Length: 416
Figure 1: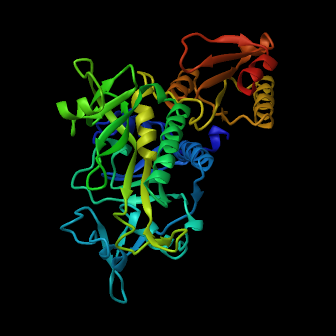
Figure 2 (figure 1 turned 45 degrees about the vertical axis):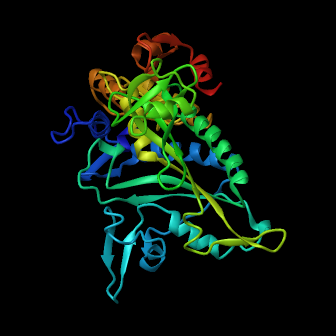
Figure 3 (figure 1 turned 180 degrees about the horizontal axis):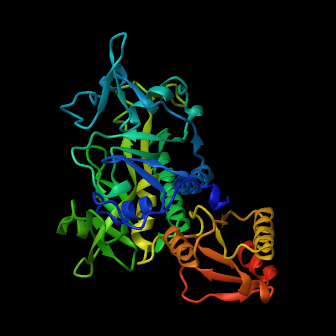
């Protein structure tokens, strides 16, 4: 993409009403636009990041047998009344609206009922199970107070997978696969070494659920970490009995602030029972389907990455989530410099490298400042100086020094 064709522009100052680092930098960089408190539009650069995260999650979900689909945002009142979660007294953060022809619908705040109702139409035999459908969709929660930028909003984009198994044993096998898949996701987006599988409350579903908590000063949760075993306990359930049952020692547990970037729950028959979601086993007996839930908020994950890696100059994107791998900067408007930069842009694109080409006529200082703020992993510079040596200047966003390379060498660094 040519930067001259990108309608968004960077801003020098952060919005006065934003206190979170992620929102400040993403708005300054033109990644997102704030519509209102807790509601953001994703601009072209921000959408590319979200799509990269989405593709990583999709690959890992498909690898463990996930089947992608798309559920409706508008939710049927009668469906949710079956589980008693339509009532505002039970769930106090619904967004609901009246239909012109009468009746009322809600905007999805989660997906358990929707999936159970759909699977009811297709599951009747043990031969139909297990099945692991998932989707990416907008979720709406009428929070009394929205904060933390895109990490906690009233509207957000998430992935939810639900497992439908014959029994607890079959469920547990998939549950362990999901843990490994989540670790792969967080490793690929660059936060794996700071993310811990964390024991949390299982609510009415099970003794424990598992959160994936990323250690970060901007976190809203407190966790106690066993560094050696890479596991943690959420403060909400932390006590001597829990520590003993998990065979942890504690005095050795480090207290840290963290951000919840994903969670997995055993649901059991909590949502299959109200929908009479049953199958006939090998003996012809009716059995309730055993369920699990597996969620990741993509905006929250994107905001966490910004919070963790940003420096005093701006955003620092890990390679797999960056909107572009290379930021190509052209300094000078002579025919020779323009042709050299254009040629390099074409070579990068033909090699399949995602590249943002800063072909604007701005001062070098402004271009460098924008490049640092936007945070692409690698920067290529073409100028009269580099042209004189028949080379290109290469600099990694996480390194202080740049170096001059032959064009062929520079291409190898981003195509190998």
